[in-house]
Length: 167
View 1 (cartoon, rainbow, N blue to C red):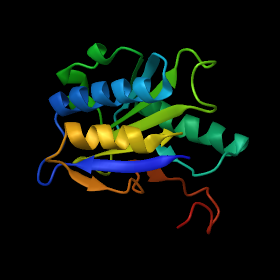
View 2 (view 1 turned 60 degrees about the horizontal axis):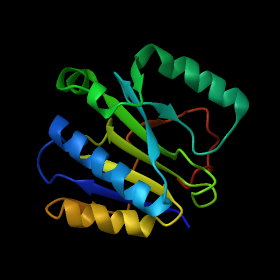
View 3 (view 1 turned 90 degrees about the vertical axis):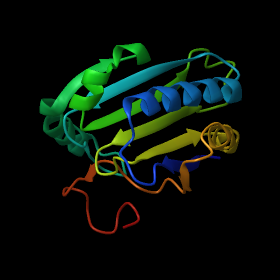
């Protein structure tokens, strides 16, 4: 089963130090839950990504063309995202992927977003067994406001037909 959740500051945008701490703990919690080491796929963009809530090959090509000019960096290395890059980014996404798929639960992966339209919030998606990851992060960051994770840091594509995506 998949799990969505969010953690947010009450008053201020998330800092670079919070990004590093949250991402590091998220990776650690995913590794414990998936029972295998994981790799990160961090993407930084100057503006919020334009996205859809469903897969369509033609639309995905168009979205890639829209988002590409705003690309800053792709890296698997959390340390590569220094404070200067963090400050230049308008949107940050992090994928967490098991390195040993045979050891991990079926279809295991996780996703995390920062900045964009919700600069005070980090939004998480984990499948499966995300409840364990959520509990771990809530214990590690008890002063942050908890949410359901059904918020998007990017901008929904105007090319998505009305009624699709739960809006």
